[in-house]
Image (cartoon, rainbow, N blue to C red):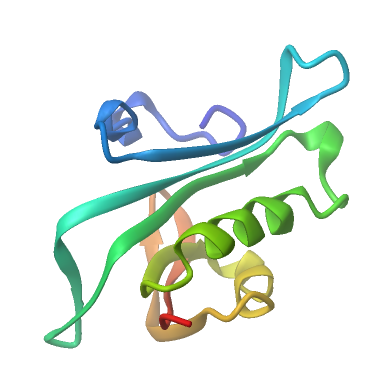
Length: 128
């Protein structure tokens, strides 16, 4: 959050929900975080263009600046897809990083939009 100049208003505390799944990779001695993402399970499916799309929402995909370019986010996404790929998923990708998600089966939906001062686009991955 700090690197992208987002403020604490972005914190939604959904990390603490019992259905939230956390995926992480640790660096070096195991004390430092190298990459992380979370998967929210919404009771109601997200709606896009008036149609329900997915109960699973991937978010907070982050890689520590010292560990970028090593495919860590791709590894985390692969783990999510291995576990939950039988369900459709959605996410709001930073526009410049959308290819990462296209590479694992997500497709852009709609127009780009501003979220926390950063260009994003909604992306959906159908169930396997």
